[in-house]
Amino acid sequence: MTAAAPQAPANRLGRLSDTMAATFLSRTVVKEEAPVPVERLRQGVSYWFPDERRWSTEELASLLEEASDVISAGGTPTTSDQWLAPRLHSTLRLTRAEAADNQLWNYIGLAMGSELVRLRWGRPADGKRVVAQAARFAGRWDIQHFSRLWWAAELFRNGDDYEPVVTACSNQDVLNTALRLKLMNHRPTAQAFLRLLQKGVVRTGREVNRLVQSAGSASSTIAFEVVAPDQPRDHEALAAWIASPTDMYWQSKRSPQGPFDGRVDERSVSRLVTQFEELFRTVPAADGTDVGRGVTTG
Image (cartoon, rainbow, N blue to C red):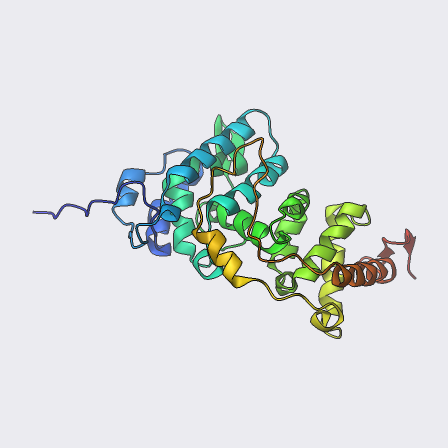
């Protein structure tokens, strides 16, 4: 006689291993020829998170439902990311160590948010919405839909200010390339990078990629941490914010507020903005076109 599956805690986030995620993420599911088998999937979920409010699924489920409404009402993939990233970060109050657990994101992507993933990443084909990459549901941290946006908010926020996150999500190449750079762990570098977008110095995806390459090359000879030191983060304030109620800050007409763990030193940001502008103007593109000056090098 087969033993009954353990009863899942009511309204609690869980963890789904990569192996189990791959089992349920079949080609037919990715191509929308079959739904995600959520009930069977839950039998493979481990529920080890403590009985604390921040591990409840209630507010997250409401957020994902409203995010679906944003897309269904005519939102573009970019505007959807801009709306969701700060609200997801403010709702899922995680430490970086907790957010590095891809099993949590596997659970959210398959057990809770699969339809939103399909709305965001699916492309029409034969009356269905086909998601090109299964990793959008469950995969690497910078590809999986929800993990990608949470980390974008974490790395590009300026303390409690999420406005830079909206700027970062305005250009998909920032999320596709810059997000993966170790440089973005240095907060003044991340903010300076975004200031060039805000100023219009960098606009297109091609220019973003060129800036990423230039900054990456420069980091081998320039210690950005020395040129533009960062202020220590207030870890006690961050811990207090993580433990505090969200107060439904994700509501569509109310801007969420991040942790008061300290904003970036503006002097450091200004130094790097100047340096990055110079790099962008003077370093030729890989194809020989100097984008900054609009000339071709010979």
